[in-house]
Image (cartoon, rainbow, N blue to C red):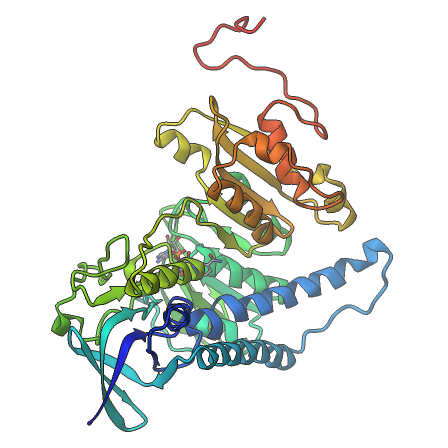
Length: 481
Ligand code: NAD
């Protein structure tokens, strides 16, 4: 067996691993990146990127359907799913090619195959019928996570889809049941609803998109209803059977058995870590009972030469978090004093309306001991939103009552996933409500809604009427008279 030696080896070429490898090489480390499938991992090949290509296309269909309201008369749109799939595949190919270009350009050696630890400083990589031993001073394990299967719904790729099949758009089912009202179920279910499927969502918990501001969730649910979809919460999917030409999903909805006929089933009920088969035991790496690799604030496992990042180390399962962790681990390996020290970890959910979140919700702020105030500004009162005919939604800011330190922001509405970037920067820089409220925002633009929401929280709104002062709990109504 051939042996190769590197300063550092990254296992897994997803958004955690490929970024870590680039950063290691930039910092002068002779680096190998081992990937068994495609560079870019789930994110690029069947997750974030292709799903966004489909979401944008589905939005275009809706824009075209609604164009007549704005005086644009066109034929009703028809969806050629083979062409759409081709477009999506082209997007993926371009992105994968971009990553390969970056790795090569930075001097990273990409090794195709499956790595398994045989010692704390060595892995064996099997690929293309060959085995290679690779030794290194440091390893970053970034093998990610995979979809969970639930009893009664064996993923067969035909009747029962995971996100992987749903993103591949094999067909447009007349009726689709989405099991799981998490991010994946809601994003992909929305695509199919927009492309013409009759979609039924089943979510076991009392709310879809658990943890998201309920006012935003209400808007998403309203939007889905308008598109002919049905959302059942407190609905646990139990199993399904084929009856003639259709499938019948059995679910317990609010404690009562229900049968939902459909043509395809999409199961999106969460992720589990890819920690098996890696030889982590052989290397002595500690893994939690649920399979997550335990790390410190520098992403080092209990074995000093082995680091772990991204989904493998636990939720939230976010590509941008994995990338940041990859950069930090690489810097630590290169001798820098980097560590997890971020304040703001934004989230972006591509439902309709879109949702962008960062920092604490009002309830979370209270639970952390703050006395929070909030300010909300609806897109319906914003010139730009009215002009582009996307007025559903709002920006809500949460701040500390006394200091006015900004604690969290939820954007629900047009371009919310992009708009939250400004809020993330504000939180990361320790901004106060005044910092945002006093910053001139170009007019007419959507980010003005963030500035306005901060003004509302300060009690100085311009484009909405000031709410009448209400006494706080336990405070005399005349206290400020
Ligand atoms: P999730 O954990 O976000 O949601 C799964 C949902 O399925 C939960 O709400 C759960 O209550 C429900 N569920 C479980 N069993 C059920 C049953 N038998 N019947 C009905 N409902 C059931 O999982 P996901 O949507 O698969 O996403 C996986 C991970 O990927 C998540 O952590 C998600 O945040 C992440 N992700 C994020 C984005 C984004 O930020 N845009 C996009 C895709 C995925």
